[in-house]
Image 1: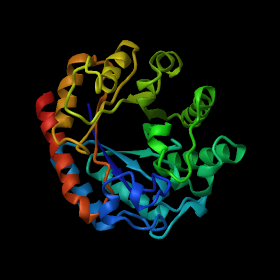
Image 2 (image 1 turned 60 degrees about the horizontal axis):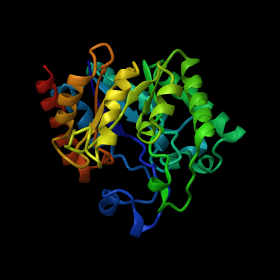
Image 3 (image 1 turned 45 degrees about the vertical axis):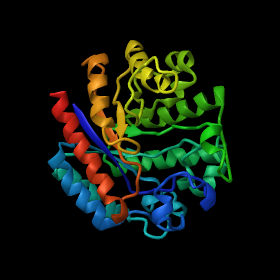
Image 4 (image 1 turned 30 degrees about the vertical axis):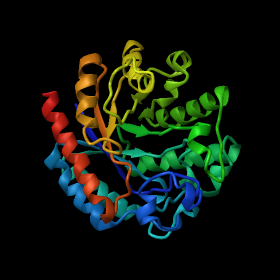
Length: 311
């Protein structure tokens, strides 16, 4: 069983939209220009050393603009880590008995880290850049078991306040997803995605999503009634994905409710077969900075409670 935590190295996820419409609460506290890395090394190191204490054995690293890619150095910002430095961090993570997994979010709702290429989506240039980055990251991680491609929240509702909004629809969304999946699989790595596209396209998703792609549906509330008019559509995909035979790593968070993770564990343990339930992932959705360290610790504490409930 994987007990995973998602940590942010890069945090450029949203097209800047001005203080009146900033889409995340942390930006009201520690907002800095998107030209500076929002990850403090001492906070990163502190969290990493704490992970085994809470039972974490898998770490998903949202890299974004956090490293100086050799293939595309133009994506680096002030504070981006060198590849050598990052590899040393990966070495330490492995020494602690934790499996590091790369994440590059290619959703148009969360791709500001791609710089100018985030405004070239679905072009030949875009495909080349995506391919370059995936291949380089797989090499940096020495062929990880999984590669998280993101692909969440690509909707108008999630981008309505952004200065630059891009939403791929129907065949184009699937075409680009298949391209990314293929780039990962060519290197012998298993692709992994957020599953929320299923919320509004259930039959299409179950028909077109390749079975070998790891699925992480996510829900951060505490009402797990699948028949509830407001929250049922976010919870029922755990059941639909199980019926469809998909491997799952359900995802919780303390973003909204501190009890969500252990409730996710309890719910999914009952309805997902042991064959398809690979583990769980906890997310905090805050940058790796001192101002939000308490949220990170509370998120890790929830993992420990979830482990206790599972076993």
